[in-house]
Length: 189
Image (cartoon, rainbow, N blue to C red; front, side, top):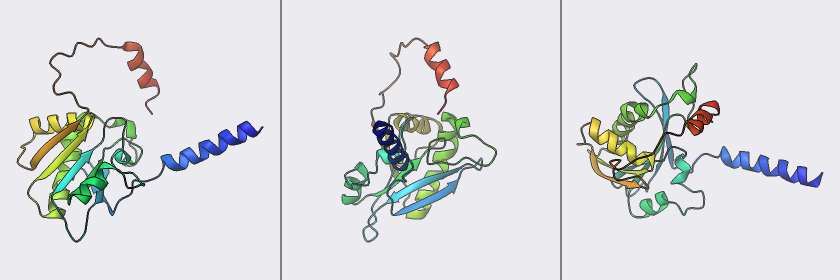
């Protein structure tokens, strides 16, 4: 009986931590061209607003990958160096509520580079008054950097940094894994 109580308390604590919003000085909710709302979590020194950086998490991540409540995250280091950090929250993850009548599981990779990033970049540049920003992408966030740069004009990008993103996909010889892909469609969460 005690074991069951410990497990239940642990699950309650885990759920509370799972629903915790990333620590931010400001949270900006913006609408993309298709009406989908996304959030940008901003951290910066108000007295010393430096160049803007947009940080994008990977496919299984969220803004907490860059922002820790303990103050030891990548964003904390960048803010200490004088940067104005904007952590992107891609549509479809746990911190993003879809428009009414839409499932968060309908979000696609194309939505990210065609709708989310143009809206986010325009918002950040308007808010900060800068003409360009830096982009740091982790995993899929780095792949989105590649795709955005290939599809859109890059005049708004000062630099791009990728973390754990392949440099290219030229030698990729992976065979499809139908069992894995089928199981992902059965349990999309």
